[in-house]
Structures are given as structure tokens and as C-alpha cells.
Length: 116
Image (tube, rainbow, N blue to C red; front, side, top):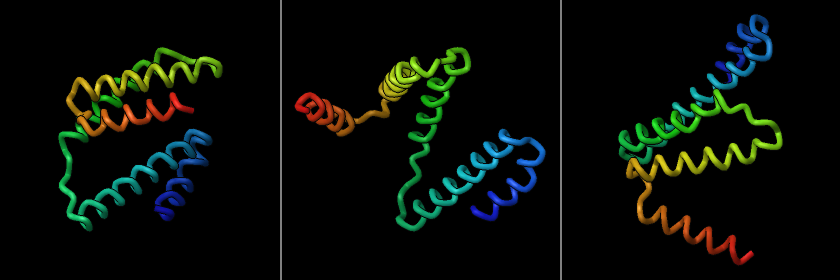
């Protein structure tokens, strides 16, 4: 991953400046994520949750879409994050990705936050 990052940086940063650096980081991180995922799933014989991955990609795509039109200021950014987080969780709920144990974890977090 370090070699890929260095190679990408060598070509992208001089040509594209800050955007090249952003793409360098993004591509190298995605490569690392993919490599680590493959290693983890193969080493520990974890079945690939293809259906869950597709649901997460759908929910993420729908959640990110409004950010292209809703340009939040620094003051409104926390509000935007909160709204988009609720949208994300709602989509996962509709797709049936949230299980009973997930709901129990959320309920226990709510109880802990109210006692603080």
C-alpha cells in the first residue's frame, strides 16, 4: 500500500496538485481496505456477506447524494451529518439490514446517554 501510495503520488500530485493528493490517498486507502478485507475473510473463513455489502452500498449512495446539492456551512455541518446519519440508518432499516441485536445495542446506547 505504501508503494502504491508513493507511485500514485509521484504521478498525480505534480499533475493535479491537491486533488491529485486526494485521489492518491483515496485510491491507496481503498486498495488497502480491499486487501485487508480479502485477508481477513480468507484467514478467518468468514462468509462474504454479499447481500449486506450491496445494502450498505445502496444506503451510502442514497445518503451521499444530497451532499451534492446541500452545501452546508461550518455551522450547519453537524446538522447535515445528523440528518444524513438518520437517512442512512432509516434506509438500512427499510432494507432489513438492522437486526434485533442492532436495535438492542442502539437502545442500550440511548439509556447510557440519558443517564449521563
